[in-house]
Length: 361
Image 1 (spheres, helix red, strand yellow):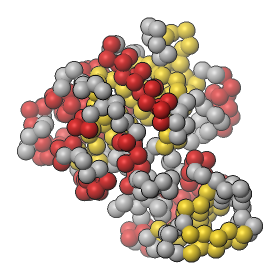
Image 2 (image 1 turned 60 degrees about the vertical axis):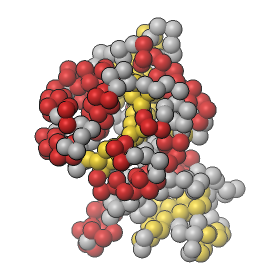
Image 3 (image 1 turned 45 degrees about the vertical axis):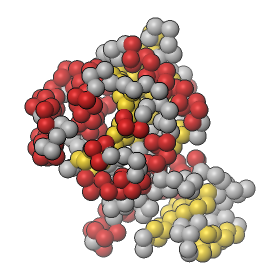
């Protein structure tokens, strides 16, 4: 285990596509989405056991969720939970954590991961992470993990790589282009081509390399954090971050840095990954019964197949005659929706908020 390796977990999202299970006051990263007895946040941190020391784990989250983070990760010290006053997408989030870590350890190598992804092959995952960390320690590169696509999924971003441009004797390939969620025809072309990977949103780099990239490609954000370097890690940090976030624009690290930088490499991998962004992704990743249903709850099913049933354990649910549906109940809201129509969940949330108030979102 390398004492200069750090983990940054991004845990500030709301996960509205998982409504009603994921709510503003208790989003999906704090839930046992897979029905395995651990929250997504807990699973995420446990996945990196042996890769970095526990004291090198940092969680960036909305300040409203700091107590939830502490409940799920009681081993963390308060200064390992970085509270954002408002959401500003992934670039300011990563800048905050990177500047904080760089101040503490100029030799740091940083792994950045979302808090709500699923990994089925954890041994393979750890091997891939160690490869990426080793490459980042030895090279001035920004590394992203790319997932071998198993289908033309329109819900993921894609990374095109240049096969003949490797990083030394590693498996890393130079990135050619990033493409946001394509239509089905384009996604099929990407998969057929063989030189496109799913964008996992997992990154590895040295602290000095990413800070330099902020100066080059997001100089406005770098300028903000440069001014507060001496306040990070002190009692003045919270007030500085309030001001910093009021000045930072809402921008993703992909758009702000990764799509512009010329030292971006991707490490192709296949470790049973899903971003678990939707109910349908839970159907793909969850344990299915003989009728292809994913069930988490006390449910009795009759003539029912291809469904996702996620309901409170204290409530008996009887379902008959459904095919390809989501049946989800949480905190006084019941959702019954066709799996093929799950993209409308955000629409449902907006309608509920406008007609029923904010108590249900």
